[in-house]
Length: 219
Image (tube, rainbow, N blue to C red; front, side, top):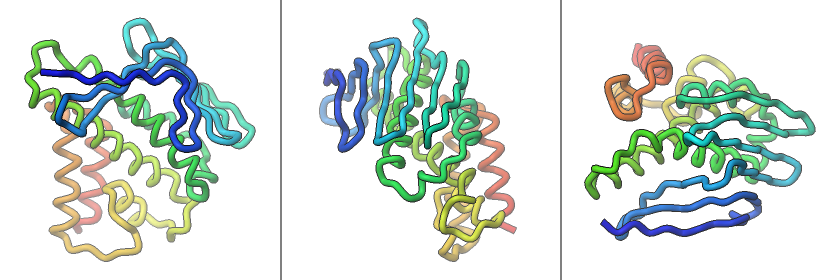
């Protein structure tokens, strides 16, 4: 297995500035990848918004400091995907729905945070296919957390705010569209397979949220 490493020191992703040491890692011949944070601090900036991520020596998230719209909020250690989501759920992201830079800032933060939390799940004995699948699940978890974030912050969006709209966003579906029961169940099953407590990326709280949305929308 040939691993390709790309060292990123203070990179600029579009208009997003990242300060710290970051490595993008992928398997040769695959488009799936992960990120490895090599510094104790990683700062992501976009315009006047700033997110500082601090990592422990063991490789988990020790602290996150959000500076958004002139306000600062700090959260302590996060050891699960649902704890990571709880931090973002607490915020008031009025600008998220209006500014592409802010959307990209949060996507990048979630993507890197998921990679950190998922590091302990990857073993030295994994085969090439298993490593690629692991990276794919990281991407899927990132997508799911973005969906949950948008569902939680829907009050600041242009959507009609009701329970149906919140649950559709939770499953990655457009609240302005109509769906058959089969389509809703298929979307729900996809995310329940990812978050089921018995699986590699299992998270009981996220599984509960997806199951709740699928059950409500399937009535």
